[in-house]
Structures are given as structure tokens and as C-alpha cells.
Length: 127
Image (tube, rainbow, N blue to C red; front, top):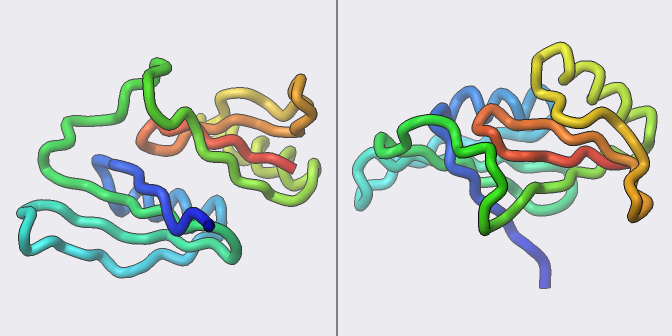
């Protein structure tokens, strides 16, 4: 078995798609508009390897997701393949105000930095 995709609610579908394309080189698919659920729109972002992310929006979303820890998925981790790649992307995202935690080796042996997506979702970028 393998994860096919994960989904992320976003108040701004285009900004979220640009984030994934600009910073992670994701290929962004066309906008899907539901005929059965008025206002629901989504796009898939696909990476060279691994599962895709379905970005979803609707007029019922009132703003960014809460930033406090809560029950549910905590973060997504994306491997960049090397420590220099993690440092480089973390430095560039720090300039954009997206860096939450600078690169470090964690207690469980991962070299990672933590960033925040436009919706507020946490993303670990790992070596």
C-alpha cells in the first residue's frame, strides 16, 4: 500500500499552489470545480516522487487554520535529500517569514527545519 494523496484546506487556492510550485518544484494541476458542492474548488500538486497534495477551498473557509496543536495530522515531512538543500531552502524561506524552526539534528536523528505553509500547516523539510 502507498498513500496516493493528502488534502489541505486553504482559503487561497492560487497562493497555495504558487507556494508548492515555487518552493518545492511541484507540478500544479488544473482547477476542479464541483457541480455537486457549490463553491468547492481544488487542484492537485504533484512531486517527482511520493504522494500528491490536493489543495481544496470553498467560501465557507473563514481564514487561516489555527496554529495551536490539535487532534489530527500534525505536519507533513518532505525530504530534500541533503543537509545543504535543507539549509538553503530554510534560509530562503526565512526571508519570506515562513521559517518556524531553523535546521538542526533532532533527538531521533533527523536533520530538519520546520516551515509554515500559507495556510499555517507545518512542513518539515528533511535531509
